[in-house]
Amino acid sequence: MKKKIFFVPNYIGTLRYYEKLFPRLSGEYECAFLFISPNPSWRRVMVAYCEERHYRHETIDDSIGRWRVPFFTALRKHKILFKRCGQFLERERPAKIVSIENDKLYLTQALFTEANARGVETIVLQWALNAYHDIRIIKAAQKLKPEDISLLRRIYFFLLKVVGRILGIYNDSFEALKRSSPVKVGIINEQARKAYVAQGYPAESIQVVGHIDSQLVMEEMNRIRSDELYRKKIYEKYRLPLDKENIIVISSMFNRKDVRVFTNEQQIKYFKAIFKTIRSIFPETTHTIMFKLHPSEHDLYNQGVGFGVIVLPDSANIVEVVALSNLYVAHPHTAVNFMAITARKPSLFVNFQGFEYFNMVKDYYGITYVISSHAEFAHLLADAKEGKLHSQYKITTDSHNSLDRIVDFIQA
Image 1: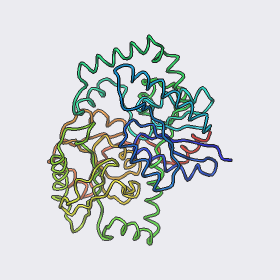
Image 2 (image 1 turned 120 degrees about the vertical axis):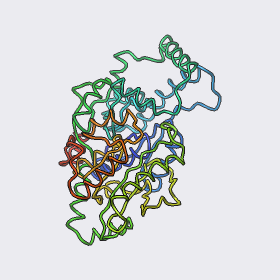
Image 3 (image 1 turned 30 degrees about the horizontal axis):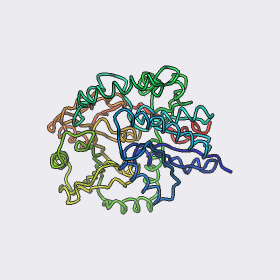
């Protein structure tokens, strides 16, 4: 009988990242997903995705009914969650659990505590940016939130912690945090190490393993170059003319619940301005513009955006799309930057709204320059067209066998 390994994503983007490990691990492990995300809409999307692809999945939630009583409900849910995590582990008896950072998905703290107590190997595997150790970065990120927590809610959460500690339900002592610490932590590059240590992860448990997509994109690029039949097939898949070069623009959402600085109309207008500037340098006769939506983004662009842009849905394979590109355009905070940079793609990073947070996190990717105006954008696009674009980044992530190293890291 195969040993069991459960992967704990917080939304569909993380799930698709972890999914890429299944073919390499399924020979030795029964691979499955475990959903603990408190966001019901995100959970529904993940469940539908798994059922469509026949992936095994389990769910642990902290719900206890419709009625909510201040203090009592929150404390009761906290205790029930630990109990349900214990019941899940006793029933399934997994060998390993692989999750995103357990400070980002607080429910995994209960899971890790219960798993560690039972000798289950707990693993955190970084998949995207984690720079939340610097108070300046945290404050800059909060400025992008649609609204701050009210004073009344702040007081409530403070009192909730006090009451929880008095009753012995909440325990955030060093020993309690230690009990929820993963056995090992795999990070993308050295830039992330400081962030993880500052967030309380033991330094001795941290290991640089790279990014899965770094190896996959290099393999995809080599296949496109060496296999003419495959090249034609992949171009047909994305409706790309074989005689044109491709520019990829990665969407960032500024109109969603947790980052709402635009209305839907402003979101469309913002990216149309980017396409317009690109087209002022690269005409439709020579270049195709691909626009890749975010994994959790609703398609606001189903009526088209003009400028000969091909809008790629969230389901498009990001590895294939980046491999097909001759020029890459994105904001400094997206995890896709890891892939473009390790693939040595000519790249431009933009921040036309002057968001402080975007400029502050660029170093975690190795980005050395961020464009702040459309005039500057057009100038650098012209440099790229003439083959004179200076690199806008330095390599911080080792693309060599990154998938192999991550698989070895999990299995060790």
